[in-house]
Amino acid sequence: MMIFIMTDSIKYILEESKAPKTWYNINSDLPSPPPPPLHPGTKQPAGPDDFAPLFPMGLIMQEVSTEREIEIPEPVREIYKQWRPSPLFRARRLEKYLDTPAKIYYKYEGVSPTGSHKPNTAVPQAFFNKEEGVKKIFTETGAGQWGSSLAFAGQMFGIDIEVFMVKVSFEQKPYRKLMMQSFGGTCHPSPSDLTDFGKKLLSEDPNNPGSLGIAISEAIEAVVKSEGKAKYALGSVLGHVLLHQTINGNEAILQMEQAGDYPDIIVGCTGGGSNLAGLMFPFLGQQLRGGQKIDIIGCEPLSCPSFTKGKYAYDHGDMARMTPLIKMHTLGSDFLPPANHSGGLRYHGMSYHLSHLYDLGLMRAKAYGQKDCFEAGVIFGKQEGIIPAPEGNHAVKGAIDAALECKEKGESKTILFNLCGHGHFDMTAYDDYFSGKLADDFYDESSANQSLSKLPEIA
Image 1: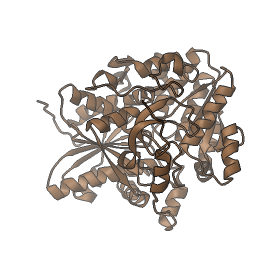
Image 2: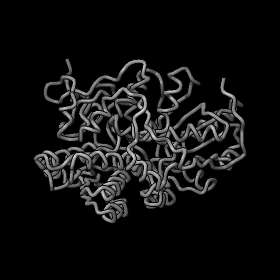
Image 3: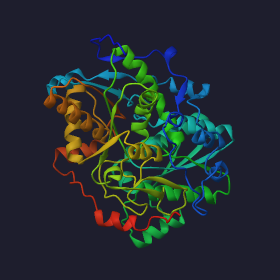
């Protein structure tokens, strides 16, 4: 039985000397392994060599590892020290405003150099590429958090970073592009005229707003054309990315001990899955080893609801169908989300680990409209003094809903959520919200059904 001594603190700071030195690997505790990625040509399970053209072997071995704890290399830990451990806050003013008996905590990742959780994986990805002598990395980005984070990490290790950014975000968030440039990276709107796939899409529709699936295709095409001189990096979805993010959850376990508390509910926004996974995997691991059961809630946008509207099936991670096939909750790799301000949460599919957990009933999901999410974000900002990124507003909304449900039922549960970053580069979206210009969410079900009808056939 767990015994906790409550404190009245607002923030819980973990000393550098007590920072975790390992990442947690959920593969070690799963009741059954997730279905394996498949080679896009043979449709047979993909082995390490199949991923080698894209990723350094150090990351590939993390993808397939079943070791519970994987050591964080010292050079990575040294860079982490610039902002890690990140603070855990008790949202006491928000609790009072909501008049809820619930206790609300949030892990704040906006203290990183680029203002989000993305450097947690950008730094180790750059490190392992550097270890194998890689000089250039191509990648994609949605709202720009991942692209700016990899540009930062590339600068730390002397690697040239080139980014394809979803066009609608490129136009809405010019300062993200400038941040990438400030760190030495190069950023292009996607679809672009720099790749064959981009040219094809622009010839069909010059106003194509772009999607993460398109940007991934362009980045991978660029890697292929480099003839082995460049690698690819991904900001979410894959196992090694989620692994790196568990530094956050490992810290949170120690900080919740400082607070004398333990979460009953964990909430995170979900686009590709790394945000929620990074916080909750270590806690879920404790549950799977016999610990306290936790209600885990993924919060996704109504306009791109892969969990709540998608199909659990093998699909490509990109629109050009160049990537390995992954079994995930998907809206189809052809699905083109509408242009909305929810930024990074516009991916057609979900992490294969989170998809597996959802299928096993170990977590659930809710879809929210962006106006409701911005309303929640503004409430949070007024009470807690932090303006959340639009993606993070989904988690804020989920946490507030959970707290209000506790109020309705008279239950004093402990809620922990991941505030993945600040919204300082997203004020145009807030301006649209305040001026009534923020578009209503629209889920194009017919487009999704058409895209799903083209799913690969797997024997």
